[in-house]
Amino acid sequence: SARVLGINRKNIYRHRQQPGKDLVLKEQIEAVHREHPAYGHRRIALHLGINHKRALRVMRQFHLRPPRRQAKYRATRSTTHHAYRNLVRDQQPITQAHHVWCSDLSRMVYRGTVWYLATIEDIATRQIIAHRLGKRHDSHLVLATLQQALATGAKPIIFHSDQGTEFMAERCTRYLSQQAIRISVSDVASPWQNGHKESFYGRFKAELGDINRFDEVGEFLEAVHHQIHYYNHHCIHTALRMPPTAFAAQMFSDTCLQKWGTCILS
Image (cartoon, rainbow, N blue to C red; front, top):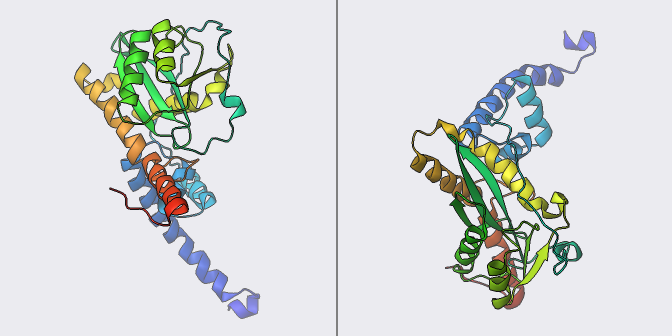
């Protein structure tokens, strides 16, 4: 008996239950991966409300991996512009929505044709404010994305990017100046100074998956738009512990409570 062996009977019962609990969690993780195919153990844990160490243990036990690919990120060509400097470096941490927007372009090759995705992200909420696809990484694509972002009715104090020629083109810098938006740039060959965009594109491409699986270019373009909507509204951001739009709504609600005691969201 357990008493003769000096073993606690509760430990025996717990040991018998563990494999069954792990199998249940395995099925839950697989279900999460069907909806969120890029979730690693930390976002799995946040989604299921469990300890991340337990999620990692069970994923290792059953060889569960997020069904995503490794993405390659290519930077655009930069030039040195001494007129602008990195204003974001002195602003950390950024906790106010629409204080700083950051932007970058990323190269995507669909069945031999090169496309460029331009995005503008709010650093505080991690929301993608605007995005556009084009076949050329030029100032026209950047300006169109800027105009789309400002059409939302929001406007940043600072707009941050690298020193790519498309961002430093006169039509873009002039437009930003006309909107009374301060221009901030990363130092040359310093991609970590625009780390939010580096991180976003790395995860975005991994979660989007192999774009050559789409039969038509329209399907590819629709998938990009759908993935950005998914990122904004449904994907848990590990730094926020919730999707960006949910975090933005919470931030707005908290601000209203601090100012007026209550707030009604439309």
